[in-house]
Amino acid sequence: MLEEILNNIKLDYDDETTIHLAVFSEPYLDYIINGKKTIESRFSKNRSLPYQKVKTNDIIIIKQSSGPVVGYFRAGECLFYDLKKEDINEIFNEYRKPLCVDDEFIDKKRDSNFATLIKVQKFVRVKPFNIHKKGMSTWLVLKEGKL
Image (tube, rainbow, N blue to C red; front, side, top):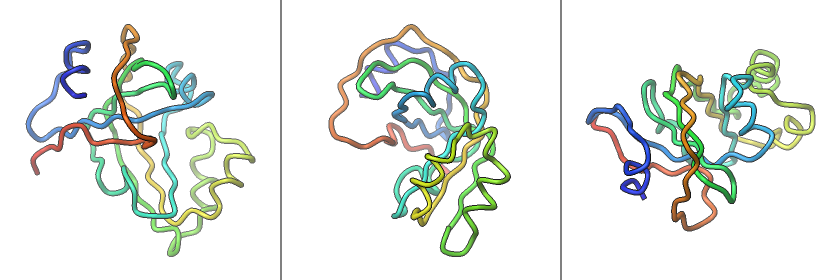
């Protein structure tokens, strides 16, 4: 899959860069593309990707849910929360606007145990192209960077 992406996008990365594929649904995909959403979040019950696996300067390839790859961005600051130890309400109070979330989203995420927040830097839109992705995962690591 990484080869398919690299054939369609000119990415600037080095051996330390991890390349991720993230699946986005609407309206959040549109918010990222238009620059309204400046922090991406992933909430989960388990320590699933990208929790503690994404770092500053990583590349996040954006794929539309049931659709094509439409762009990518560089990860800015990455924040990780263990919600058994930290109050989810404080996170939403501080980051609600840059996350572009509403009350319905917040209510759905209340039973999460872990949260990852990734500041969006340098979003690049690309000519949409399809890739062959198997499974239901909404986050994949395509290339692990060296530490």
